[in-house]
Image 1 (cartoon, one colour):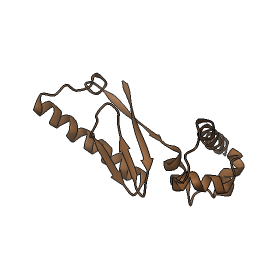
Image 2 (cartoon, one colour):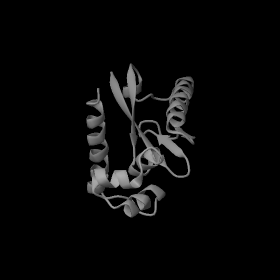
Image 3 (cartoon, helix red, strand yellow):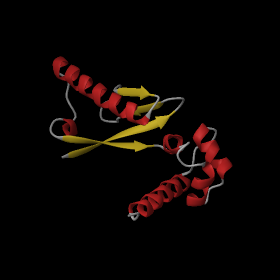
Length: 132
């Protein structure tokens, strides 16, 4: 089964797109909503491509699984209200004010900073899995 990467970003709404199908996008105010919207948009997009006789990317011709990848801004926005910026700061070592700048799009994190955010949240996830 092919894994197809779908990029999710945040700019006053979640937005989803995939490099394999330019022009196929979805937006929604919630993360689950944008995922569902992209699934539906992709289904319609592929049906239109078939009808028009366009070439369908090989990865989308058989069984495939959508893999949703959030950028740092979307990731931080998703956890806003679930985890405080102070809590994320403790997990990542990144100051809360800087996390706020990333969330609001004032600044974009460098690759290393994004990795610190992702690794901090993964660490929290592993710790939560140990709860019995």
